[in-house]
Image (cartoon, rainbow, N blue to C red; front, side, top):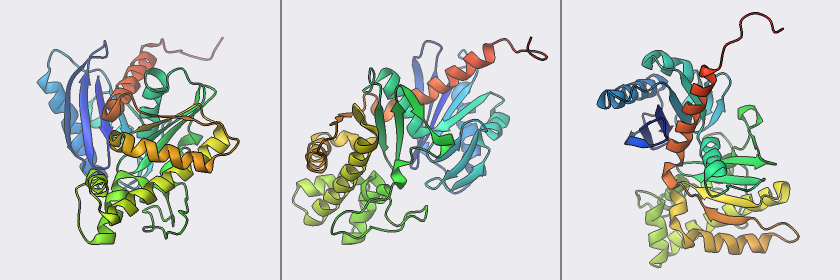
Length: 312
């Protein structure tokens, strides 16, 4: 099967065998602001990967994308970071590849991988926060994933007000103070560039600059941590999760992220249950694993005997 993880910056395509072994992973910049362009890119990526492994003969494609996704219809309702709205991506990609396709939201997919096999395994109530170009989340309550018919768990668009600070910029969704404008990897990089006029390649440079004594970088990182702590505190208040898993590229910041986040959370919580804050087990590979799981589940459904006529 082919697993596709579409991100706001990069798209990963992987060939996975029936035992779950990843045979090859490829990565390329994501085509943005064009549904046709993205579909052409994905169709070509699937075909090229399959051609490189003729003995593998993939039978299905699993795809995850950021944003609002209607899983049942296979439609991307809104993906601001990709520039997509109301795109029937599942059916159009199936037409291009000749393979059955299953489509889902990237954060919920990565969260499912972590909940089943990763850092949240064994928990009943958990939140997996994916921080990359934007911010998404997967919320599990009493062992079940909550998706709100595709509209739920859009943590990146939770309004947060950092004390003493103005929102960095109006979000692409139109919201005045969305979490991902403060705390996503992309948001941190953009905030630093707006503050200093100096472009950076990503949030890692901002964290490095803060560690080296750059006051502007320290302010941007601090604001991002304040916003993220506020969001986690609200999750703790409403859901009382046993564990909060942080996934995505920003989770690689390690103690630079988790230590101050934990300190801020302690200042915000009183009687609440303190969630365990941990990095994702699968790191940047969670999206590929999740897409492979999605393709495998689709194959299981297709293998079920199809009922003909009315039920007895």
